[in-house]
Length: 427
Image (cartoon, rainbow, N blue to C red; front, top):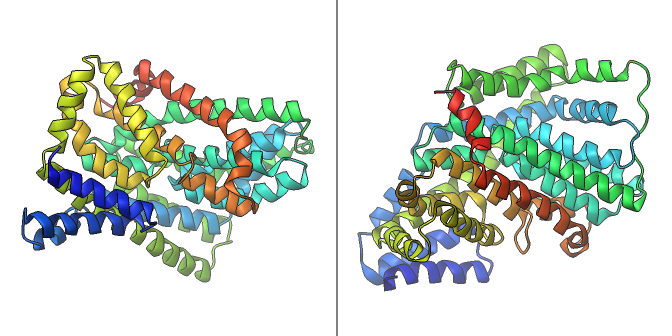
């Protein structure tokens, strides 16, 4: 690795160690590199920052964020939770199962793990505490289950990867469906096992007709994934157009069907969307600058050569990348990892015949695990903050949940048809 590349990585690592925000650490690393080595005029940094965000597909991010905000304000979240409670009933550990199912369903609306934690955790974590569940267990469960929102479509992480790697976002969305469901089943299994072992209670037995009423009330929310995935699958619209359609749908449902969406709610949704999208896009621009610096220093070629010397097996390469991504996911924000790593690994995917859709889903699951792994673990930290506990109190239960997620990751690594079955139907 060249001195320039070491400077880029070293300055960024130092910035992370002294707790500089990810975006500013990336920018500082690139500016330091340009000042020290004069590889290009300083104006290039601004050009690369803008170029990193210059994509029509990325417009889907603020649109999906806006749609999720509107649906939350319209009361779709509460109706989803009510449906889950009616379906699960009073089985032992029922509230824990409700938490996983509700996180998965809301993830199909929001595409963001942190948004999932806030929406579902704010409702269910206090309820689980009142029912006797250990707060560490509840926080770890909601954190890991919320990360399914980054795997199951519409996924903001997949949009960024698809844009960066020039891979079909529609195929990535389809590829995330089965792994997302497998992660849900794995966490439901852990939730029931731990709850029964500790004697934690379930929910309440639904009244006659409650399941039907809850299903009808939640039906508009359940139709959103059908609208998005079905529209993309049958070529009705692109992912960006699907996001815009979701906004229109949320406005219609919130104002005309439920009549729970006020003008104040719409204004609050716009403000929250601007704040969230602004933060995401700054990271995308900064990571684009950093990725340009690594490419200029020919780091992708050097890493490809190094991995080629270690293994010549496709699965060996995937396992090596998995280890790297799990480590990075524990320390860095997911979007920054995608934009930095993708240009490095794309030559490897071509060299070893790895399908970019398959790798994109593996990358997403890796980052979902990383989002719950200390010291960063943004989803886990958000859940613990809502529950009012330290991250240390959740670690006792976290291992089982991460183990279940890693088992799913290994399964889809070695059986790529699980991921590629639905995307191949689009061809």
